[in-house]
Amino acid sequence: MKKIYTNYLANFRGLSREIWLLSLVTFINRAGAMVIPFLSLYLINVEGFTLPQVGWIMSCFGLGSLFGTFIGGKLTDTIGFYKVILGSLFLGGVGFILLQFINTFYGFCVGIFILTMMADAGRPAIFVAADTYSRPGNTTRSITLIRLAINLGFSIGPLVGGLIIAHINYTSLFWIDGFTCILASAGVFILLKPKKQKDTNAEKAVVVKEGIPPYLNKLFILFFIIMMANSLAFVQYFSVMPVYYEKAHFLSEDIIGWLLFINGATIVIFEMPLIAWLDRMRISKTMATFWGIFFLGLSFLVLNFTSWNGILVIAMLLMTLGEMIGFPFSNALALEMAPKGRKGSYMAFYSMSFSFAHLIGHNGGMNLVNSFGYFNTWTIFSIFLLFVSGLTIWLYVLLKKSETKNI
Image (spheres, rainbow, N blue to C red):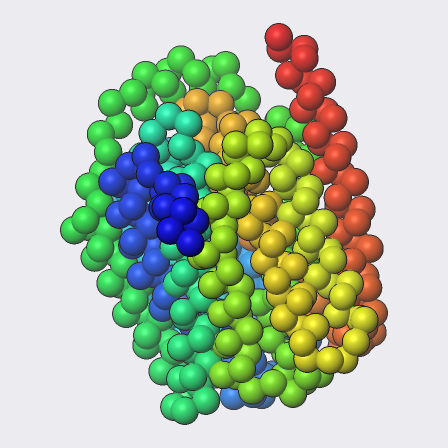
């Protein structure tokens, strides 16, 4: 047991102080993110919106995310990641507090768009910060530690959020979300000092002329399509799935919180050792992405096997396994494919794949369920992800050919 504990701690050695501080701030921010996993239930149960209306509101969520990540990437390359992260956290916190005072359909569409645009402007900046503060050879593990902080916060947030909803009310979550975002911005300002951009201008002057923008990189475009398609299915776990838990399996909000806690807690305990082991096995980043997509598809498929509530835990664990394997390596692959001086733009493009997924996925999932029911919806997503897995194998082959040409 002591050896397992020692080996677990060894996975965290060698990471820079700044990465640890960035992770701490990220944890504070995500621990307060209680509204998002319960947003669809709030819109249905409190505001009285229909499934298609909730789908459109979540599309505005995605549209705001799209604009936010695009603007955030541009700002990261111009004013630097530090200011972008600071502004995104503070303005996002204010936005969460104000959102609770909106109660009309169109008002929610506009409010969610503005809130997400401000909050998600910091996403590409976080990735660039992880790359900047990482020591050589530690980028994947640095990203994994930040993801661990996100998931630790996200495991605690929904659990506490579910209990608050069950024993107090929904609106308390908006205040908590808002203040924790503002607290996280204060943490960035106090604890994380900006790293001097000593080479940035020189890199831009020389490298940007050689590197191509992400939208002209054919292999990166294929990678973008794969990640967007994967995320279309993944986002169902944060909008359609909570509704499925309540309407099809009759779970209360506090039990749903415990179910979401399984996801975050599993990632916190197992992701870093798993990534370190896969790193030692020298698994291809592209093939790790493939396995992430494969397990996500399997998580939808098993839901149709039985109406037993225990299958929800099995599906959650399969999705979590796919998330643990796929996302850290896809993050690292995106950074690897980005030329120097363009990392902000490439990571913005990468983040925009999730934004497009939010734009289309929630709405599509809600309308699929509304038209065809849960069984057919999960079948469609399983088949869809099987196709996406095939695209990932194709990307792997193309990248291998590209590497051979460059030798």
